[in-house]
Each structure stands twice: as structure tokens, then as C-alpha cells.
Length: 237
Image (cartoon, rainbow, N blue to C red):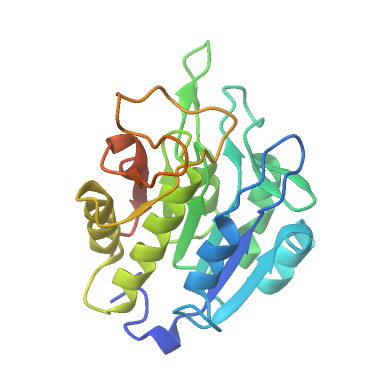
């Protein structure tokens, strides 16, 4: 069906890119290497390529993207309510939305972009009432068929688990992208996936008592803060 991913794992190639080291004043994302490794072979599910930290640059993104049906980016992101100031963090610095626009020629065959980062679906109006689009819209408007993105600052551990479960669900060939995300969210809601919480941002919202771990105890990720931020925009097949 037009706009849907290939039904078989071997026919779907993933370019998985991420930042795990502390850089540009942002903290390290300790779960990102495991997240990427769980998605892309040798140890992961899909064929493809993994690019991490200093190798994740503007140039490597453009050079490596052709031939992949899925682009997965695990990093810091920030929505800034001023036009053109929102960005994703690459290994060589901030990647503002003005530069995301230049990816158009490289996104035409990309079915799904997964932005495993904070605030990538967020948008807001300017003081004059003009809508400021989120980071995700620049991928959609430049050729990607669908984008998974977040509505607020997310937790590093729960996001990594959510993403790994999403790809496991998708790889069955029995679920659409939308259903694969829904089932991954249910896995967190029902406490089937637990880990040690750590923010994928400089700060996180206040949570109800008992909704985050203390010390080294595993967190239960049933609170909506952990599983609800990610939405699928565009073609959900």
C-alpha cells in the first residue's frame, strides 16, 4: 500500500543516529547507545547503519540517508517559541530548523522519521498569533511520509524502552506504525517495561508521588509522562 513500510524486516533499512555524550551544555544520554543497538543489526532488529556522537554530523546525515526507509534520531531536542530557534542536537552542534529544510532532497524515499528527543512535536503561536511549527513539521514538509515526535521533555530510560518495543512491534509485520506505537505505549502503561529513570532534558515536569524511582530502584513507567508524549504524524500505516 502506498505510503506504508515494506512488510518484511529485511526489506526495511534503518539509519539510526544519536548523541550519547555530554555536549553543548546538555547532559549525557546514557541509554542512547543501547537504543540504537537494539534497533539496527548486528545486535538489533533491522538492517541498516548506526552513527553515534562525533560521527553524527550534518554531512554524515545527508550522505548516509539515501537508501534507508526509516531515519531514527535519538538526541536532545528543544522547541523555542521564536521562529527558527528550535533545534535538534547533533554530534557537531545544534541543527536548527532552518537547516532541516535542506534535507528535502534526501527525504523523498523515507517512510518514517523517529525523533527520539524532547519537544519535537511541540508548536505554539507567536505573539501576533502566527503559528510556529514544531521540528517534526519540517521533516514532513520536506518529503518524509510520517514522523514520530514528542510533545514535551521526555525521560531517557523510558523513551529508550518505548522505542525498542515500538520497533519490535513493527518488525512483526502485523501492525501499522500507529498500532506499533500504541502497543509500545501500553507496555509502559501496564508496567511491562521498567528501568532507571533519567531525564532526556535539563529538567522534567513534577510527577505525582511514587511515579519516579528513588535511588537505584527501577521506575515504573505507567505515569502518562513516560508513555504519552510520543505521537505519530502523517501516514500511520
